[in-house]
Image 1 (tube, rainbow, N blue to C red):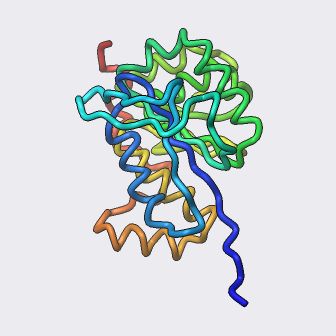
Image 2: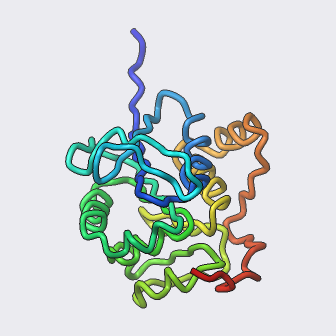
Length: 210
């Protein structure tokens, strides 16, 4: 008798103006895990959502129809600013993060989590060019200015854009073992920065302009 694989479901959260690599860099890595992990896309409504770079992604589920999520992945991007005032997004994240095993953000996605109050009392990081966008959302967060990504309990937040892929491999190592994460990195010919404290882009702290 074949043993049934106990799987997890990861939800990639979409909104207009999300950063393309914030979403698809991590999903490339998570998508290599295998049948233990199902990936779905979620937005406020089931529709095609345009990224900041232009290509669109179809949201399979609306907030109201979304299945149970074990893992949540929230990208950043220039669309972040609008989402900071989107009560539906903030409420959805509060409700679903309370039930999820791990909630992850990439880049300025941590600003949205902070606005929702989810990072209060926790360590977190964000895009270094626009770090003040995140820190201005809450003074109750222990913002880490120099980190590739930060894990604190059920939350993981990464620095800008490409850092999300490093974080994803770190979470894969946490859930499925480092050997699996290394094999995925090698198979995708990706040079994994596996040290979450190594942040070569800290020198650009708050040098971006919105």
